[in-house]
Image (cartoon, rainbow, N blue to C red; front, top):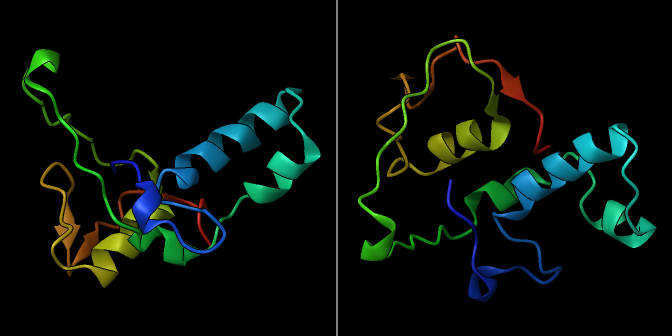
Length: 115
């Protein structure tokens, strides 16, 4: 997923990109990294599922080279936000995932990044 953009942010300032940020912060805290308590509270896992539906920012610059879709094998964990977005937005159907009935195949375990 691409990151959210400020213009699409809700009233709390949370955007699509906050889902992976909160997941990374949660993992870092578990390893002993310290953050300001206000930041931990703002990015507490899981974030509300509605943020998985925030606007996707598609940015690309020719200087970065041509985008390559990475392969995602069956059995790897996916953020629950991917399943939420697939289910709620039928235009979002990543071609590098096995999609069945509009959502990622059950072979992909879901990580509770969103509630």
